Image (tube, rainbow, N blue to C red; front, side, top):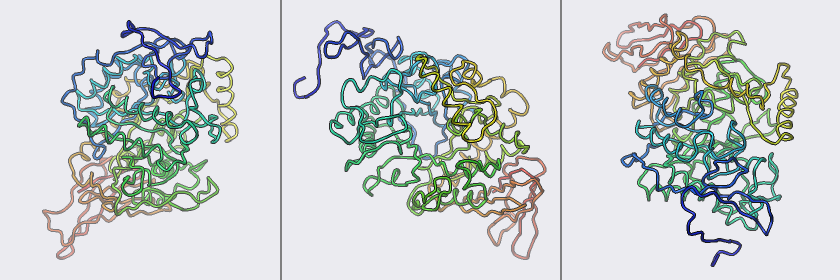
Length: 573
């Protein structure tokens, strides 16, 4: 092509919408799909099909997006959210999310991957929505339906690797480099010879999802596995490009990173020397809360479990902020500037696809508590801490009603050798970690089907009660401005360890009192002094009807205490 060294092109006059096509490279007989294929109706190895984005009749012309600040996210895997496993079926359940109090739906990757079902992190056609989910039109119908209900939609995208089955990107150019090693082989080439076009491929792909499919944000998978030694990191380039598109469209757009680095530079503004992303996942908060609730200490939980680690996660974000990580065998992380960094830039969660699906049996936290003989009432305690913490909260699908269905690791690789390697590798991995139980075969269709949500559960008493608890917490979060205070310094936390494990989290005029132990507990409640009767706090929410507030008059002031049975939480203000 003129002016584009290394590029080839051809004009086909009658190749309109729906035309199938493929490429033969250097005279080879094998026909390969387009690296930028917008539609793969015949699977990842089949021919590509042209797609005209202008044909779709959007109805969201008045939608201007939703900022990340103040939002509550809901992580969803399209293939297991409903028995049908399609975009259209998922859209029929969006009213449930609206009633729950969700603001944004985060979809696990939908870029075309091999087979019918899978997590989506082995995608190989980054521009084409997975056909079994409903293809390009199905995805647009889902986003349009979400916007009609006031829900933003975020897409999980994977730019650190491509899947092994159907990945022919390297045949078209220097998209990968052996200069950097990754768990998946050669790294995506972001900084070696020929990398300019690779970077453009990734940036343009991100903009395509936001522009052509009307997504409101992107979640960038495992950015710690992206190596770029250039002066301008690809994440900074993405941030700048998305900001430009946001200004052009007049619509809120945001980028969220998943990172294992505990590095606040990801969300530090570009003008202050950071990458300028809008948010990042906070694994330390998850580890701290999970370990306190469940008592688990294996693997990366070994440095967590004390109430102090939970207090630090709530007030400093990173537990490992330059401290020694026993699990890694080295010091890890760097401190967050809590005076300047807004709290909403960090996403907090109690469950997500990784923390559930990477367990050997895919067991959710309710199953973990049950196996450990811990009261299921702890689910309400964990939910209150999560949803009233200073961070942007995220729920994993089904968490709101305590879904009993597991969420396992499942694949549908068509290559027999690859399928066998994945199944055997999964068993070996957990055997090395001392797991003695059965490991579900990722390739077995039963493993996939067992992971599908059971939508009859929310109507059952125990599940309905937990669902109402989540709705009440989210309604409270929305009604009290201090619960969306952007300052990390706006949260004060006190805690106790040992036999009496408790936490007091105060955010403005709202205080969360949590008893993580099994014995009844009385905690002093911080109130303004002097406090006239009209200013006395009242119980806003209680996970157990036995929770009460007691008032003792002390001259001009009042001393308030909360009586909490074991494994309960009360919210007052």
